[in-house]
Length: 119
Image 1 (tube, rainbow, N blue to C red):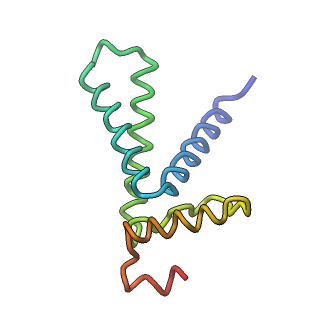
Image 2: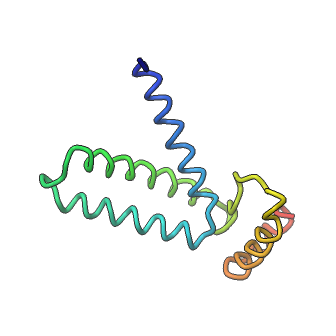
């Protein structure tokens, strides 16, 4: 049987993995993720007693994830800075990755003061 401490550690690690994945999304996808899960929380908050215990716990998990993501976004020097930051550069997809990075830089340009650090 898994001990409570093990479950807590696993849950903490899972939350960390999710936050890192969201932070590494392109800015548009990240905004959509935040919009969607904030909507779920808003719905949960408006339903009150009609929710199951599972739904209440799920909304609480989303609340924590959103808070962590938003803290990391505020720490970014510029929007899109962390795109693909935690993913491997699979050689089979390097061309697609470079193309997408170029598109992101067109929509979310690196401010001049940060250009030397991203090369």
